[in-house]
Amino acid sequence: MDVLHERAASVCKRIGYFLGRRLPKKKLAIFFTRLGKVRREEGVPLEEEVMALLLLKRHIWLYVLQEGLLTTNLELYQALELNNRVVLYFDRAIYYMTLGYEQEGEDENTGRVTAETESV
Figure 1: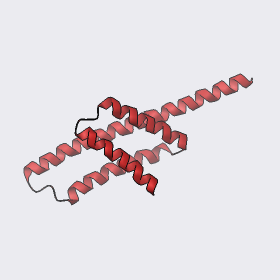
Figure 2 (figure 1 turned 180 degrees about the vertical axis):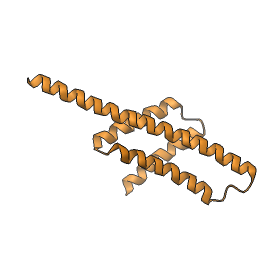
Figure 3 (figure 1 turned 135 degrees about the vertical axis):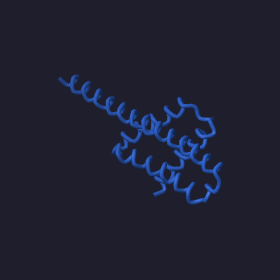
Figure 4 (figure 1 turned 90 degrees about the horizontal axis):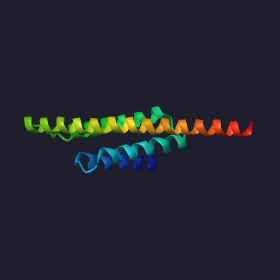
């Protein structure tokens, strides 16, 4: 369980930088592409990684709703803006993680073909 908590904290840490516009899109892409490659190497199914990010996104929105931060029109507008930024972050995270996951699979397949070709 500690591993899951650390992984979620790592993703949430970066969302703070992203929301504060201190995390460029390129760095986000590098982080999640690498993450996808690592998760593939670890044998974690892609659908589990995607679901984990979706659940984390949902958890963040439920937290905002639960804290009662939506009492005025201005707060509602700010919450919707926050939600839009969070959705964008997770959309990009899922895209780049999937990209890294697939790239790692291509690297594995290329390696297998090379090894088979060398043994022939």
